[in-house]
Picture 1 (tube, rainbow, N blue to C red):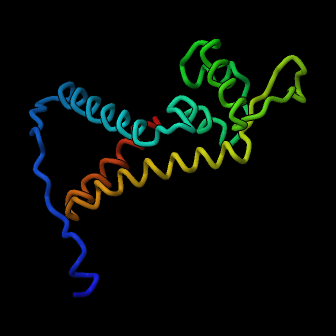
Picture 2 (cartoon, helix red, strand yellow; picture 1 turned 135 degrees about the horizontal axis):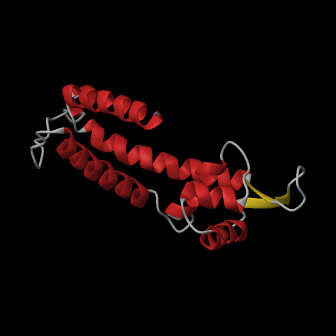
Length: 159
């Protein structure tokens, strides 16, 4: 038998619940629930002893530039003391550094370490792998539908 014959065949998964959305409000409610459940599950799939979901989110915010704790708190929509605790745990784990701002000596900037970026990329890979396994069980038509939905959701989120 060759590898092509051994591969599992995609199947069409019947929805557990058929959408009864008859208007925009109903569809919005159903999409909100689906997106939130998926997001919550993805966060859980990448949780580990190394990186909590909150730490992952902070590292994601730091991947392109350093920020103050206040900036991070606003981005994550948490109180500054909560962000201080998250950053402290990242500092203790060696995943971020604190430096005085060159522009304003009163500000402390938080930046990821190479280990922090490695932890972030590892967690992101875990999330992607979890989702990829589930997508592989779908047939081409369902994957195409989700590809279109992903593009639409990204477009809506950018506005």
